[in-house]
Amino acid sequence: MNLITRTAVLAALMASSPLTLAEVKVSDAVEYRQGIYKAVRWNFGPMGDMVKGKQKFNADEFSRRAANLAALSKMPLEGFVAGSYNGTYSGSTDALPAIEKDWETFAGIMSDFETNAAALAEAASAGDMDAIRPAFMSVAKTCKSCHDKFKD
Amino acid sequence: MNLITRTAVLAALMASSPLTLAEVKVSDAVEYRQGIYKAVRWNFGPMGDMVKGKQKFNADEFSRRAANLAALSKMPLEGFVAGSYNGTYSGSTDALPAIEKDWETFAGIMSDFETNAAALAEAASAGDMDAIRPAFMSVAKTCKSCHDKFKD
Image (tube, rainbow over all chains, first blue to last red):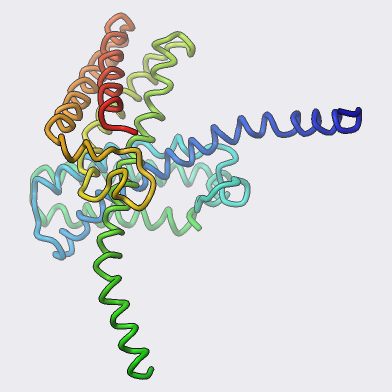
């Protein structure tokens, strides 16, 4: 290996190693939060079908899914790490850099998600669709407000 | 659209629609359970590092992750649906067909996972590493016993 090649290889290693290490961690965070959101949708879908009457209301199933959703709502925030946003992250993500720029608003909506999901789980445990419906809509609105601002 | 084209389109729709619908549902289930396991690992990794002394023990963080793990342990089972196993599923999965063949054993281990994760969360809430360590090892053993039998 001649000096120029060796220098080029060293330079490439120095440039890429920390990036590669960071990249692994960032991709873990992205896959983690995307996994949580897949589980959110998995539960929220059938709940929505029951609220809309597309699927027969099953109070036990609804309550179980609402409890899962309340637990899941606490989890995604820590997956939004530096370098994990659309435009900078090398993999696939719909998370906009606005999240980083306006973290306070984003974290506020995520906190609303947690509060509203807990209220929905509480309403669901009583099994009364008249109380469930508005609580479900509050969660749906929180999802939408975040997607409008922060999701591609 | 002429008759031949229309017939071809109809035939294609009739042939592909049920398959496509079934496929979407199975892939949703696979992505759902894989998402849950990513979240399990995301939490279990740092907990393991604290148990092994690779990372400084932080009782609050450990307890939060143990509570997340206990919630997550209740979720994956419903993602193991017909047609979602290695060899029959068209996408990527490490879940062996043995799960379907020996569902009782599989569901039993998943139930142990839930019980042991709840016990770990309980031990973690007291913040005592001497109680946490064996509870953590019980969860780790449950993971391993399932992977040995049912994961490629």
